[in-house]
Image (tube, rainbow, N blue to C red; front, side, top):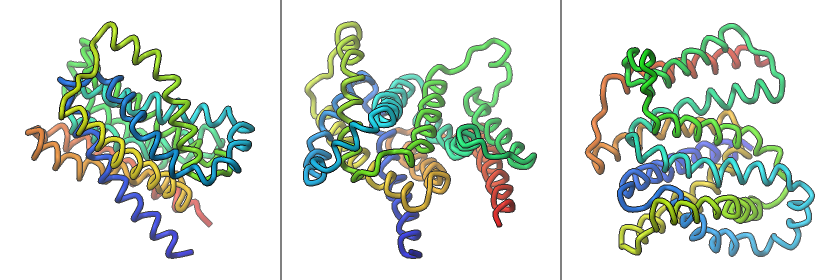
Length: 299
C-alpha cells in the first residue's frame, strides 16, 4: 500500500510535466489555431487512443456508464468541453506564466468545493488560508495594480483561465463519484460526450472566426496535445486521484508553475515579473496554512 501511495505522487509529477506543455503549445499556436478548434481536434485525435485502450473493458463497463450517465455527463462537460477550451481562449489574451500561476489556486478551490459539497467544517485558520490564496490569485489577475479594480479593466484572458481552474477543481472533487469502471472506459465516454457538446461551438467558430489551417504547426501541436497532454496526463492524473485522493492530487498545481514558467521563459520569451512572485507566494502561503489546519484536525 505504501508503494501505491508513492506511485500516486510520481503520477502527479508526470501529470505536471505533461500539462506544462499543454499551456506552452496553447500559447504558442494562438495566432494560428482558433481556441475551440484546437480543443476540438485535440479530443478528436485522442479519442481513438482511448478507444483502443478501453476496448477490452467497454463491454463490461458500458452498462455502468449508462446507469450513472448524469455524473459522466458532468465530468465530460467540466474536463473535456470547458477546461481546456477556456484555457486556450484565455491564452489568446494573457501569458502562459499567468495561466500557470492562476492554476496554483486549484488546490484551494478543491478544498473549498469539498467543504461546500460534502459539508465539512472549516476552521478560522483554514478560512484564512483560503482567503490568502485567493488574494494571491487576485494579485496576478490585476497584475499588482489596484487601479485596475477601480476602472474594472481586468484582463479577460486571466478571467477565462480562472473559470477554467474552477471547472477542473470541481471535476477533481466529483471524480470519486464516478461509476466503478476502468479509467480508460470513463475517459472514452467523457471524450465522446465532450466532443458532442463542443461540436456546435466548433462549427460556430469555424464560420465566424476562422478554420483550423492545415500546417505543420497544427499537426505537431495537436499530436503533442493528444498524446502527451491528454492520453498520458489524464490517465496519470485520474490514477493519482484514485491512489492518493483529490486534495493531494491537487498538488500538481504547485509543480505546474515551476516547469511551465521555465518553459515559457525559454520557449516563448515571456518575462517573470514582480507581481507574479507576490501572487505565487500568497497562493502557496495560503495553501500551506489551509493544509496545516486540516492536518491538525486529523486524529
